[in-house]
Image 1 (spheres, rainbow, N blue to C red):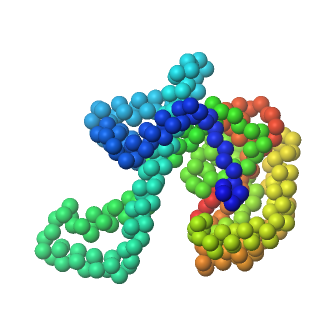
Image 2 (image 1 turned 90 degrees about the vertical axis):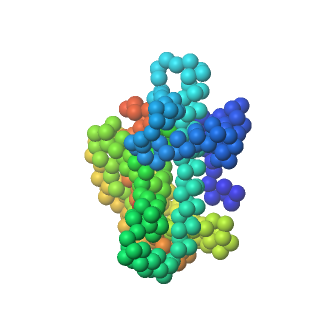
Length: 323
C-alpha cells in the first residue's frame, strides 16, 4: 500500500472497540495469562481440525465463539450484532496467527536440505535395526510434522469465508466492486459453489493470465521490476481492464458464451504473458495462473446477500490464483 499498488477496504470497521480488540489479539499472541494461552490454543486447534477431540470446555469455548457469528438474523439487538461481528473478526485474526506460526515452521524446515534428510534417513535405519519404537523416532516425527504443514486444514477456509461474509453483509459494499481476487483456490471454489447454487448455472472461464509467484516485495530488485512492469504494461493493463469492464456492464444474459463475451482473450493473454516473461522470467520467479471466471447475472453484493435483484453491475468476475 505504501507504494500505491493497492488500497485498503475495511468492511464493518471496529471503531471505538478497535483498541480493545487489538489488545486481546496481542495478549493471545504473547500468552500473557493462562486464560489467554488456553483460549488461543483451543481456538486454533478447532481451526486446524474439523473434528478435534477434547474436554467439554474445549467445545464450549469454540461454540461460544462461533454461535450465531456467521448468520445475520432479522431481529437482533445492537449488543448481539456487535458480538456476532466481534466473533467473526476474532476467527479471522486467530486464523492469521495460525498461518504465521505455520509459515515460520515451514521456513525452519526449508533449511533442512535433501542431504540432511538423507542423513536423518540413515540414522533412522540404524535406529530401526536397534528396535526403536516409531513413537520415539525423531525422523518419523519430523516427517509427520512436515507432511502436516503441507496439508489443508479442514474447514478453516470455509470458516474464514463465512466470517468475511458476515463482515461484508453488515457493512457497506460498493456497487463498483465487480472484480474479486483470491490467492486461495479453496476460497475461490467456495465462492463459485455458492454462485452456482444460487444462480443455477456454472461460472464461465473468461481469461487465464500468467503471474509470477516468488515475489519478495521488500526486495529492492523485485520492487523495481514491479514498477518497470507497471510502466511498460500500461497499455495492455488498460486493454484488459476495459474489456473485462465491458463484460460486466452488459444487460441480463440468458446464454453465456465465453468466446462471445471476450473474443480476443487469446491475444490479451499472449501480450500479457510475453511482458510477464520479460520482466519476471519463469526460471527465477516461478509461475501461477490467474484464472478469471465470469459470474453471470450476479454482482458480488447480490451473491453475499443471496438476493436476485440487480442494482449496479449485472455481472461479476472472480479471479483465482491457481498452481
